Every structure is written in C-alpha cells, then in structure tokens.
Length: 213
Image (tube, rainbow, N blue to C red; front, top):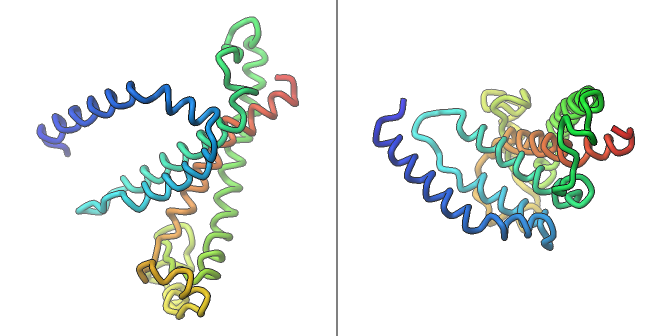
C-alpha cells in the first residue's frame, strides 16, 4: 500500500512530467514522424531504460510492467515512423463516420484482433527459441524466471550452461560487461510487446488497405 507521502510525491512527479511533456511534445512528434535514425535512437533509449530501472526492495511485477510498456512504446514509435503518412495522418477515417461505417469497422475488428494476437504469440515463441541461442553464442550468461524452463536458476542444466567460460572473441567483445546472468525473460517480453504494438500501427492497417476495409 502507498502512504500519503507516496501519493503526494507521485502527484508532484506527475505534474512536473506533464509540464515537461507539454513543452516538448510537438518536437517529439515531429522527430518520430519525420526524423532520422528514429528506430536506432529509440532502441538505444529502450535498452537504457531497461538497465536504468531501479531494483525494488521487495520482489514486485513492476519491472515486468516497465519492460512491457517499454516494448509497446518502441513498437508504436517504429511503426508510426514507417507508416504515418499512409495510415495515421489527421485525415484518417474516424470510427462510425461515412468513411468508416459500422460494418467496415466490424470487419476491421474481426481481422485486426486475431492478427494482433497471432503476432504476439508468434513473436513470443520465436524469441523464446532465438534469444537464448543468440546469448549463448555471444557468451552472455542468462537465466529465465519463467519463459525458458531449461534456463531457470534452479535448473542444473541451465546453470551449467551459464558457467561455461567465454571464448576469445566473446571476451574481446563483452569484457566490459559485468559477468552476471541476465534474465532472458526481459528480452522475450520486450520483443513480444514491441511486436504487438508494431502490428497495431503498421501490419494491421496495411492489411486493411489490402482488404479494402
């Protein structure tokens, strides 16, 4: 439970953040829509935000929510940057208007929601298989708290893999990283929600255009 001090401090932080956002949101929108190296910048920012998140005193799901939100933000920014002038301008059809009647809207729902769920499922399955392989190849020790049973901290096989020493190339490239086991679930969760958000703003509107919905 949050104390009164927590609530007051949270309101104060919220007001400051809102005031800052109102001062810069036009520039951020312009950068996302038509800036250069947007995807690279936002990927780096997402990585920084994941590593900069403070470790809570007691175990909470807050970091999982943070990672999911971070992934959604990256997916939306990447998708909007690619397709803004095709699907997301102020001239886009409004729901229940003459350009987007109820029947067409229902068709979009029937096509869009299953597509989004399929992308979420497939991206999760692919990243569960691919990320541990990539980390193992690069010599990055990993554990899994949920998604990959073989890499759980209490799994003998997973911990054995993590104790293998890196090769010469791995030591050369990653010697400046601390030798600790990273939770691969963070990457899986990030990819999963980034893919979901990207499908909402990029893939699904493109499907609507091809299907004349």
